[in-house]
Image 1: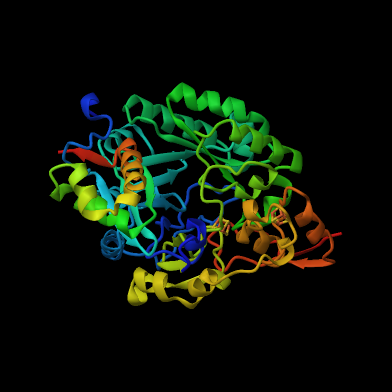
Image 2: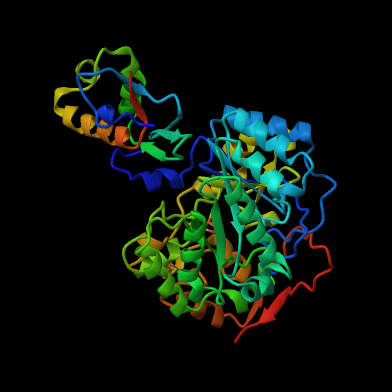
Length: 93
Length: 374
Ligand code: SF4
Ligand code: SF4
């Protein structure tokens, strides 16, 4: 069950890949599969894959974006994280 | 690869492991559907043993193939059926399995309902016994409905009702939708291909051009109906249907048959599309290195479809449908929405149909090996 309070990506909180999700590296990025809701999602850049994997090491999403994403790419990657969150792939820590 | 190349182009060149892996556990089946894609009936004595099947599951898990589509034959007639699917699920390989429902009694339904990462598809090809049993055999409609009742009683959750679309059931789409709703089930529609025993029955069973058009519009209005991506040839009619819209054979799709033979897709059980066997160096070696899969991933040409404005949506359709109707792979799909496939078929004076490499039908069926068109 999803906690309603975490139902959208709060960039000031700590997030991580859901334990229900498997990632498989591919040349274009990765495939992510949520074993619970059976969603298959394509991560279309290796940099996004690295960001998603690293989320669990940062105190919040802002820190992770600061460390791993160029400023001019920030909005694009944040939108990608939001859409992953909507698919249930991320969970708040 | 250029940075702007689309995901579909990338998929056409193949992935580290399949997205959609079908594993047919057995050729044994207690039914004898007239359109069976694998000509099933008799068990093959060379079938993978329980130990071999588990080793294969280990490899599937190591390759991070997230789920397998388990079929047959009738997978539930294997004595180790539950042992194998429970092993897969505990290895974090999800199982989506297709069954005719005849062995799905109350106890089996309860056991299935207790498992995570498991989807069940009960096959039903007509919304009434007359339509269904004409294809799937006497009593098969009642058996499938009993299986659905057992799943519902066991609180399995949203199982799937899986329908192969034919000339006789396109008119029943709304009734299928209502039937699925009455069980809280999901409806799954797939395309009839002229594969296996279907090579003999496709001519009279495949939907007409008008029915395909009706089906397309019905699907566009219902994005929640599952299709296994099988109607992308109809995307030439307008907005593309949901899905990857490409022939995934050997690129994102493949089949492991009951004896471990690996084919490019479940609908091409023929030596021309046989890539190797898992008993040799494992499945991964076949997937990554086989000559056949390498060539399927090479840049293809649009062939006779090159001048078609809808090629980007339809990609020339289904390789299996062309092959088993006697068309060239560079021809349009036999069910090309513009009729170019019918023209291509009509222009051929004599069409020699390929016969399946292995026929496990229980009776010696009359296999129509050639026919004259036109
Ligand atoms: S001509 Fe070829 S690409 Fe065009 S719709 Fe027909 S099968 Fe599809
Ligand atoms: S051959 Fe046909 S059924 Fe097989 S993957 Fe290609 S389009 Fe799908």
